[in-house]
Amino acid sequence: MRLFTIIVVAGLLYCAPISCGFGEPRGSASNYINLHADVVDSNGTVRLTYSCDYSTFDYGGKPVHVYLMALGDPLVSDCAASVDDTMTSGTVQFFRTGMASVYTYAGVVGLPTFSAVTFPDAPSTGSLLIDTVGENIFPGTLAFAALLMYANTGDYVRNDGLPVEISNTVTPFRYHAAMIPSTIHVGDGYDPYMATWEVTHPEGITVRRTFVLDTAPAGVVMVRGATWGTYFSNNPLYINGKFIAYLPGQMNGNDWNWVSGRLSPALFHQGANTITFKCSLYKNTGHWDNYMAKGWGIFYN
Image (tube, rainbow, N blue to C red; front, side, top):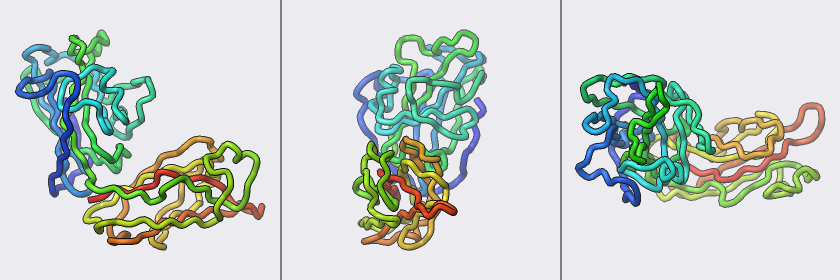
């Protein structure tokens, strides 16, 4: 199987295991493919190591489709599991073909991560590095899962009801701090179309919140949050008074748009910090954009 490196870095190791409640505990037993995850550094990079075992389910030399998943707050880990137990994890994200991005599971598996892969006839091992920030992967406790399916028949390689291999759990970021405790509405005034919003009336064209960090970040900081109803893509976001980025424009889209990104630890300090949301002025109209934001937080080491 030809797996490739997403990002290459090195550093400290950190793991936070949870127990396997269902499926087949790993113990000394081997699955048809085995996964092990390690946190590589303080920037949220994870090394996923795989090894093949053909003693019970021999797929060596036979083309298979590979589905690779990231599981946030998984129901089961470090075991073989059913598809149903795997999909009932808190967050299920499938890597798309080419490892370019991930999407949240919504009842449809879609295309495999790797199509018609042929593993060597002899047992093999390998690894890949996953940039959890760049891939926008759920930033809490994670496990990784693999599901292999024969390319020519669509049958699971492991056909005894436990076709999914789930790794141990890891926590790429030890610390989390909420930046806004509840939903905010940024804007200049109420309009009837906002009647169904979580917060119907705006607080102002500038909304600032203070959050406290128990310790200063030592590595890259992952920021994650959602916006609702932005129109243009020029509403600015500030951390401790410094411009960070413009929020994505949604053309008044009525859904929560979750975004994430990496920031320098130098932007933050131990103690009180601020996050500031501002709205932009519609050109030639005299009206300001209106939008909501919620769930903004940082994850760091």
